[in-house]
Image 1 (cartoon, one colour):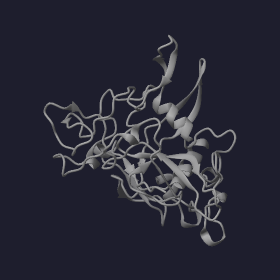
Image 2: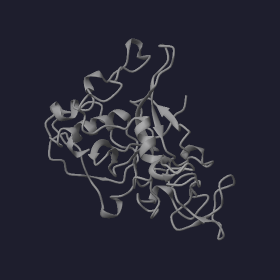
Image 3: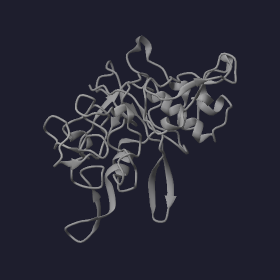
Image 4: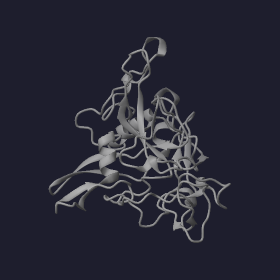
Length: 291
């Protein structure tokens, strides 16, 4: 945000929206007309929300270009920002559908996100082979338990709340201050120790849902296209379906920010015998809309 927004007005980056769900505070900008932010140490791992898909794509461009402060570093690389817009009459958006060839960092596709969240190359199969998808992104076929970290909670299907005989909570989703003596917006990332995808990704469930590159295209051109999101979010999702491998969570317009949807940066990282999806720990939140 500092790289994109703390700039002279004439050098502004288009389509970058300030997060609406964020724990950073304002500080003195380096440029007249710019905006600059800083974190208090206790807020550095809080989930961020309220940025749109386009801001996520521009962030990937910036990473692709080595975090250069040159204006051009934000405008191309993974995604061509000049394509961001709407068709005549505003019926649908014109954004580049998929990443550019050779993109080093990008918003993951649906397939890439599902594989990073659920695929385990070491999962044993009945026929003696290995490699399969877990039903949930916690490296198991057992549903998440939604609640504050370190608290035993009631099973899914009933009203959320504490239960001294219940399972320890494993995800920040499906509860709020009315259910527990805590706030879901005050739970830092990484708070559910030992709960990861088979690839070691944390907070795949809860905290924020995550933007995908995948496009939901109406069969009729007159209707909007939208981008998919995956993963349950803080406050939302109480039935467990949203964290199953076979369930698609929702979708939203790429230029609209929603507070409980964020993103996970991805890259193709070569390693012996594999091309694995690598994620970084910046997650931002936006609210989900379904069609």
